[in-house]
Length: 139
Image (cartoon, rainbow, N blue to C red; front, top):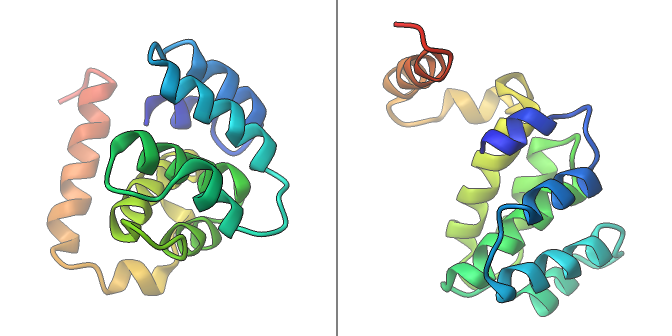
């Protein structure tokens, strides 16, 4: 998440992937991040599921979630919708995708109609502010 915040909407998907690879030690993840670069401009989102996977295993679901964020770096709604459309463990992939995309784009990018329907919205918003302040070393 922190890297998504740092790279943000002014960063490029390729830069994000390059910076992310610095932290990745497992070859299965490194290979999937390489495949992600090739999928950024793919015409068919089904290719994401075929090449990266969409199963419950983290090495399948995490790269797929990241890929959908980077395929739609300017649209929270499109990123989450594509992640949810991948099939397999779609709810997990879409959830991770939403968290990363939200960190990348900031809260204003989340559709208001989605936020309005969020269960425990007030609590979640207060918690988010507390986490943000903690990250900045504030109380």
